[in-house]
Image 1: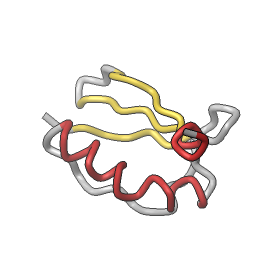
Image 2: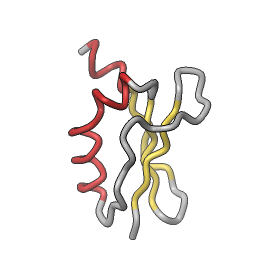
Image 3: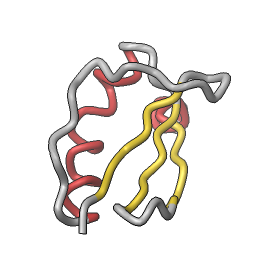
Length: 70
């Protein structure tokens, strides 16, 4: 199974990621990657990310801005 991130601006439109994601074969790999690069993504204009599996099922949406404010 493959896992992918969708990168979005604050208004929900798609954003070009400041760091190109890898191909993720596990959910854990995808989540570890976002944990490593969220600051660079946020600085590059990504406000939110959505994680989906290869069937197109969206698992969750996460605000990168909330990580800064926490």
